[in-house]
Length: 322
Image 1 (cartoon, rainbow, N blue to C red):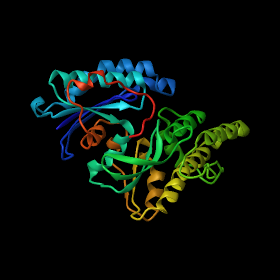
Image 2: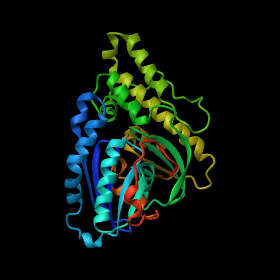
Image 3: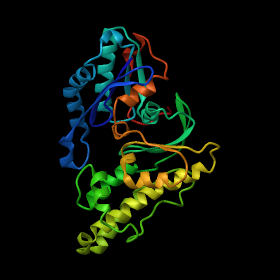
């Protein structure tokens, strides 16, 4: 079995997953301390990972025998580099102490591989939409994927959070904005979906700016119309995602969709995806947000690095090809 560690942002995660994809444990410790700032504070995230990671690993290993651990997997990037380094250092220490191989995993590949834990097998199109990443990929095998399009600026989850902040809602903003949107009219305001952006790339910066200008334009009426603003803004984000999926489906011989990342929990996105008339797979919520089980899932199909070759392994903050 594989012990996996994930510390790319503000969730300290560890999981034990068998080679067959059975999840023995999947522990996530979220850092609520960032809510007061409306976003993640990188230095605080790193310090909290340092405090929590050993406890989280111990909890994940409850009921499992260390002698059964075949390899240690860890998120190498992308993410907050300080946070990643905590996970990488912990994984290297655990693996080296037992002379186990180490499997570095791309965080984005983890989100794709979360679908394998539910038995959804390639080929399929995969949309990953979260607070830090938004991309559309063609998945043809377990070990990698072809990126078709990605965000040119803000991620979809980031757009939700920034929109919620403009409307005076809490953090994380996605759930709060979506809840308010249920009370509003999604056709009340017309916000941009970057439909003129060619191909499969996404852009949400203009949408965020459009909401800012609309709130300023409405003045005191913005509070009264807040539910309509939320509904229209959510509608624009979801339609931007669905537009790219629809474009890609036209070129698929076996059109199927998987959706991952925190935004996969959005009710409207799920409804719109289901309306496309093709098979749609969304992992359980615990496997959509950051977690270590998805990292272990990806690691099952990657080449392990033997001891001591991984002792100089470093983390990386920006995206690399998976």
